[in-house]
Image (cartoon, rainbow, N blue to C red; front, side, top):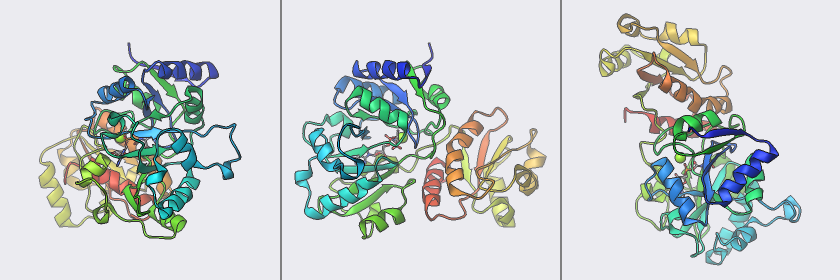
Length: 376
Ligand code: TXA
Ligand code: MG
């Protein structure tokens, strides 16, 4: 029986909450991507999450929390105190600068920002892969919040895809990824953002390091804390390799099954040499899917080097990420476009134009494309 997709009625929300309280796993919507939720303090549920995803246990999970609506007003709500009382974070390990910065960063909650903070020793090692830190996020999606409140406990929720594959941005995507392994998926519509959250490490000293770019940009973080945000290479984290610090930084991740090549330049701007290099790399492969950053699909077909027409028995399939050249729209469309071409019977190889501007959200889009690319 494939997983049931539940519309988010109050009855279905209670059904999903009851399944989670029993230790089952459930596909849930968030504003970034869909997650596979399970109780954060239940070893059995954690094991189920790893098994359903084929996820290696060295890759730690994000714990999701929601603030209790009955507590004081939003502006006075102290997330750090809440995380400490919830047996998640150990703020006593923080110096005053770290405390101040976590207070500033949590003003962005609920939202697409994950904070990696010192954990309390009672947190299951499986959730954190034995690290002495825990990743935490308060999602903004109303259904995710309602579910967290109904369950009454923190939930882990990695993206609801098989390990290394493209994150799901709709309930149907979750069904395609994990439908034969889980029973319930709560439908909250397409994800507003479409890219996974920004992950940031806050050291005990207060130093802030960006581990995964996302919708909360480095500039926004720097503006908020009034200090530089480190890149991981310059980071001073306790663990050894960057991949161990945040396995989401593994070079190959978020990848389709079909080969994906990131073009060296926009189609229209490729030099003769770049075209012939691409041609020899692709050989006689037919069935080309092209993803333009902006423009119209007709541009892609006319801009495509003639070789793809002469060798292709089938017409190339062209898709556009944003007709308006808007990075938020491109992010929203990225994963579902890759997923669609990955499943398209006429497509054997996917070519993607580079992101024209890697500042702001363009940084996160370019990061995901580099990791999805087969040509590293
Ligand atoms: O937007 C998101 O963050 C989604 C939605 C469902 O909330 N979740 C998500 O989870 O993307 P996941 O498991 O696919 O990615 C979590 C990332 C991984 O790169 C993991 O290595 C990193 O967070 N991470 C988790 N705990 C960590 C820790 N203690 N230290 C460093 N990195 C950590
Ligand atoms: Mg993931």
